[in-house]
Amino acid sequence: MARLVAGEALVALVFIGALSAPAAAQPEGPWIGTDRSAENRLILDVGVTAGAVAAPLSGQPDSLGLVPADDDVRAHTGFVLGDVRLGTVGRSGVNTYAMATGAFNPDGQPDQVAREATANDAAMHRHPADPYGGAALFVHQAYGEIDGFTTAGAAARMHLRAGRHHHLGLRAITFDGATLGYRGEVVDVALRGGRRSGVFADLQRDPGLFGAASLRADLARNGGPPVLIRGEIMALTRQIDLDGPGDRRLGFGDTADVRAMIGDLGLDVDLSTDVLLSLSAEFAEAVPGHIRGRLLWSSAGGHALRVHLDQKIGADLPYDLAMGRGIRVRDQRTGLTRRSTHEVFRLNIPDRQAYTDVEAGFLAQLAPWLSVEPELMAHVVLADAEDRSAYDADQLGWGLVAAADTALTPLSGLEAELAYRGRQTTRTGDTVAGLVTDVGAGAEGQVHEAEVSLRYTRADQPSRLRRMLAGRWLTLEVGGFVRRTTLENRYLTADEQLVGGQLRARLKLANRWTLDGRYEAATASDVTLAELSTYHTARLRVGAAW
Image 1 (cartoon, rainbow, N blue to C red):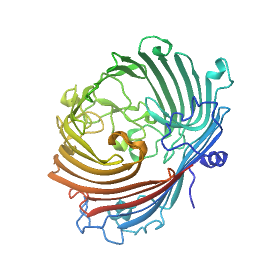
Image 2: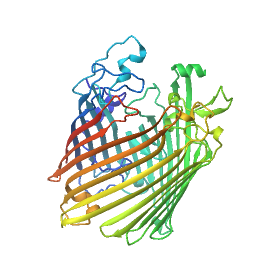
Image 3: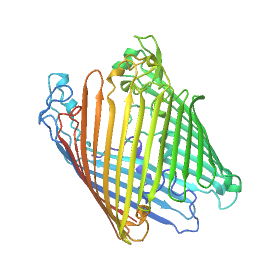
Image 4: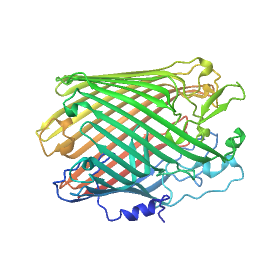
């Protein structure tokens, strides 16, 4: 029987008669600011995906030195996925939206073979090719909204949304609650609050209470300078159960209160028609944490430059908003303390040290049909070796992407892309403070990855091929990748190589029906997943939109 996540049964019933927003609708509000002169609309977008995954055993031992038997795992499985978007767009400004996905495994749950030793428990050899056991239904969004309380005056600029909806702010979050906003001539203000929603899985009984306030002032709207000022504050409080053995050993008691508050203040300035500069400062618990900058430049000839800077100077959230600021944990070996998280103790994620992170890329349009983009990134940790954890590693990255397209006819053509990226990770020191005490167990040293793809496409309107996404009704694609990783730590020194490829075909009929099929294959790691041979995945999605 399909399982409804807590609280979703009622939400699903409320919106069962609604019809949907298009797949491309923005999660923040596909209909905010809808033209009231339009007719009432009902929209439906639904899809069903059938597929199969296979990863036969290789006969080699796994990382524990055990050789899984055929009875312990399932080498292949079939699955059925569904997705639906339902909504109404009202001329009166009353709209609804619902989005849900479902998963069904026709093969059922694999048998669990009882073993005498815990290390040989079949549950430890649950096959990666078994992504879905049983069935489940997930309601991601389901809300109603009023866009404009009246047809004129200040109330016409207000909007209210209630139900389960998503907010993509400083941290992405889905919550059951309400959003109240006002859109002025220059300033937009929004207040949000409700109960955090753990759509897929939430191991804690208290999901937490969430609240946020945001402000945007676009000075250019009223004939002012091209400046956008933005700010936001997000907060969450929850109580979690500490019932794991590791939690008890740390002596935190049965429960702990998690509180988190973050905020940012940003400025976007159009220095010219070709240059955009963005600056922002992020805070955690009223303590400065990050200073970020972004510079974007483009020219009429198709050239473009992007530079991103992230300077961590202080407080931060170790994981996400739901984890809070965490607890200060004293390392028994070193006597030092570091801030770690409640719910992810077993992941040992401490508060990272200060760092400087820079990413840059330059897109050069060498010809109307050819462009190249070199990339460069550097991540430098500003801390001594004894203060670092395994998450405080210096990194240097580089890459080169080349893209080409050529027209075969006014309505068809070929696109090709070739990309190479590399990354060097350097970890300093053998001992660190905090929960992570074995920096030598860090895995990746150097990574090299190359990708190639070739696409044939047909469209219903002539245009530059790479600008013609909306008009495409047929796409055939073939691609592949190779990744070589050097593993360097105190347990092993090895070179790992993965190779994979993909075939994909997408067909759109009568501007309504969509067929999307793909097949993927990739070798399993001979270092970390030596018990498996090659992964194979095939899936076909049938979709329709009204």
